[in-house]
Image 1 (cartoon, rainbow, N blue to C red):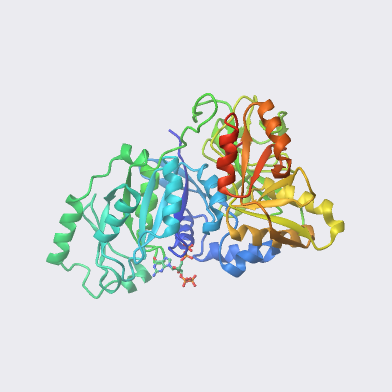
Image 2: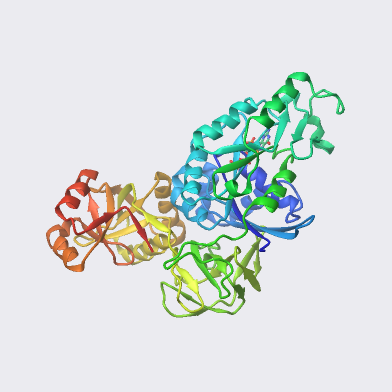
Amino acid sequence: MSNRRTFAIISHPDAGKTTLTEKLLLSGGAIHLAGEVKARGQARRARSDWMKIEQQRGISVTSSVMTFAREFDGQGEITFNLLDTPGHEDFSEDTYRTLTAVDSAVMVIDAAKGIEPQTRKLFEVCRMRNVPIITFINKVDREGRPGFELLDEVADALALDVSPQGWPLGMGGLFQGVLDFSTGAVARPEGPSREFLGTREADAPIPAELAEEIELAQGGYPEFDEVAYRSGDLTPVYWGSALKNFGVEELIGAIARHAPPPRPQPADGGAIGPERPDVTGFIFKVQANMDPQHRDRIAFMRMVSGTFRRGMKLVPSGLGKPIAVHSPILFFAQDRELADTAEAGDIIGIPNHGTLRVGDSLSERNDVRFTGLPNFAPEILRRVALVDPTKTKQLRKALDDLSEEGVIQVFYPEIGAQWIVGVVGQLQLEVLVSRLEAEYKVAAMLEPSPFATARWIKGPVEAQEAFAGFNRANLARDRDGDMVFMAKSPWDIGYQQEKNPELTFSATKER
Ligand code: G4P
C-alpha cells in the first residue's frame, strides 16, 4: 500500500493553522526551528513585492506544498504532502481547487471559538468530495469552551458523527493533560511546555467530576470506525495545543494510521486509481512569477497514478502534444528540490511558459480527462480601464496570464473594447490591481460593469448561433474563446433560459 498521505489543513483564520503546520514540519524533521515557517514565509514575501497585500493583511494569498517524511512503528516511512490552502474567505475558488488535490483534511478548531464561518465553508467543500476529516481542537492551554459543547457543535453544525479519541483534563489554568482513550494513559506536556500545566500534581488522581465527564465522553459518542471516517461520515477528534507542541504527535500518528493513501480521482469514463501503471495527473494550480526576476510559471500537478521520472514526456490535455518534463520540482518543506521520481499522491511543480493550465489532465498517452475542477461563475464583475491607453497589449497579456493562473476570470465582450474581469471575492480585485502594477507595469482602474454575473452557454451549435444573433450586446468570450452570456441580473438568466430551452446557462465550466 502507498505510504503517501496527501492532505490539507482547513480552519478559520487565527485558529492555529500556521502554528500547527510549523509543528508538523518540525516533527518530520523538515525544519529545525519553531517559527521558521513564518520567518521563511516573510523572507519570501519580502522578495516578491506582488505579495504586498498578503503582508498588509496578514493573510495568505498563495498556496504552497510542503513535503516531509517520518518513520512510524509498524508502518515504515510515511511521506506527507501538506497542501496549504489560502485562508481568506475570498479565495474560495483557489481553495476549492486545492482541496480537489488532497485525499484527506485536518480541521483545526479554536477551543474557545468552536466552528467558525470559514471552517464551515471549507468543510462543505470537503463534504462535496467526501474528503475524510480528522478534527484537532486547538489551544487547550487556554480557557476554552466545555468539551461536550464543542463536540456537539461539530456534530450538529456539520452533520457529522464525532468520535473523541481522548479527553482534556481541564483547560487553561486547570489543564492537566489529555487522557488517551486507546491507552488509558494521560499525556502531559513535557519540558518547557510544562509551564502551562495546572497546579495539580502529575500523579494526582483524576477528580470525581472529571471521571464522570470522561465516562460520558467515552460512552456517549460512536467509536472510531475507519470505514465511516474514510467515507466522510465520521470525524475522530483530538485535543491539543499547537503552540505548546502538545497533542501534535497523536495527530500526526492518526494521519499516518488512518488517513487514506492516494484515492481514485474522478475522470471521464470512470475514476482512475493509483494502481494504474502509467503516469496520470492533473493541474490544480498555476502560480506565475514566483520569482519576479525570472518570469517563471509553475504548474502544480497532483499525481494520480504511475511513477514519474525526470525527463519523462507527458501530454497535457489542453495542448494535445507531449512536453518533456526536465526540471520538475518537489516541495520539501519550502525548499524547492529537483524531483527525480514522484508517485501517486505526490505533487510536482512543472516550470512552463503558459502551456499548462488549471484543469489540464496529463498522461503518457493523452487518454485521460479528469473531471471536477470547475471554474465558478464570478459574483463580481468589473470593467478594466487603463490609465495609459498605450498599454493595451500588456494588459491583454496580463489578463490572459492571471486568468490562466485562476486569480481572475476574463471576458472579452463581442461588442466594445472594454474588457471585463470577474472574481468570486472582493480581495481578488485588489490582488489583480496590485499585480498588474508590480509585474506588468500596467496602471489600471476597475470600474463598475453593467453586468451582475456570467453564464457559460452550452447546447447545439445552431441554437447557440441563433441566441448570439439576438444577444450580441450581452455576449463575451472567455480566455478559451467559449461563449459566455453576461447577465444584468439573475432574473435575466431565468428569462433567457425559459426563452431558449435548448441551451443551458451554466454557472460552472469544467475544463
Ligand atoms: P492561522 O494560521 O490559523 O491564522 O493561525 P496562527 O497559527 O497564525 O495562530 C493564530 C494565533 O493563535 C497566534 O497568535 C498563535 O500564536 C496562536 N496560537 C496558535 N496555536 C495556539 C495554541 O495552541 N495555544 C495558544 N494559546 N495560542 C495559539 P498571535 O498572537 O496572533 O500571533 P503570534 O504573534 O504569536 O505569531
